[in-house]
Length: 143
Image (cartoon, rainbow, N blue to C red; front, top):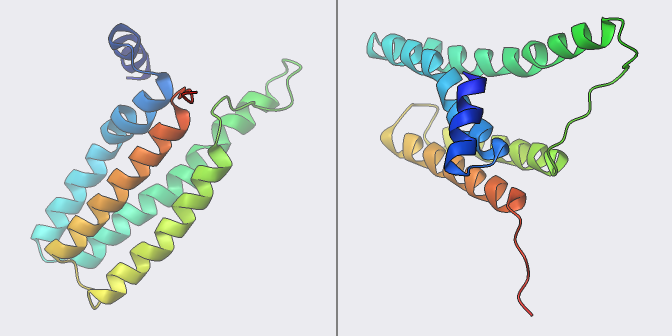
């Protein structure tokens, strides 16, 4: 999937960062989305939310470090993994701030999944994508 995303991105002139942030992220999240929809339709809203949150926590706390640890442990003389994306620290801070706002939005909706809450979360996602893309694109100032 990653190779095809890279090929398609190169063909269409889309930077790898944007392909990863949008298409790869969406592609790997579809199974979580489908399982959440299925359990939510059965009236198990708690399970739908827990599944999504648990999956993301697992991805961040296991899915990222385990491959890095395996790569570093392999005897190749490399003792660290260098990330080439600029602004990762800023994106992490923005995500943490968004997390606070999401919890506040959920509280505002009295801890119920509503259409308004869904719309707010989609707006947060769109806002995050816009700022992340703007930070990564080579924008030159006009003089």
